[in-house]
Image (tube, rainbow, N blue to C red; front, side, top):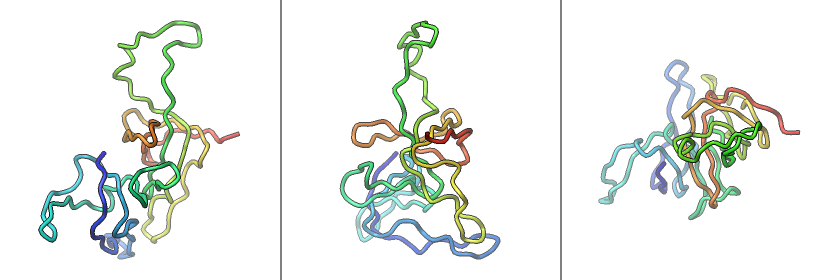
Length: 167
């Protein structure tokens, strides 16, 4: 993903079928994280910028650095803390590091939850999990991000396959 600062933001877009305004979650001055292939490079006030859609924003925050305390997953994204993969199975078989190097973890503990997916009526759907839950999500569905030296994955709520409530 790519980080940037919002230099201008519109009010949002209209739902194509109902005409209900889907408000833009970010405002001028916010810092955002968006997909590295998202956006369109252009000049704005004689400065090179990248124009992105509100749907391209993965998370946003106030301040200079991302911290777990200040990041907010955008809309239907969930921030999942990824656990370091074990190199030994429960039966004692050791798995070689070279086998695991291309493995992309797809489970972890929910650290933060976005407000939900915007419905056609302008309301947010209920998230399928909450902070502290253990989730399993589709292989390769998440966007890897490092916050304060810890590995996380930003996953869309529709990609969460199961959620085990925190005890």
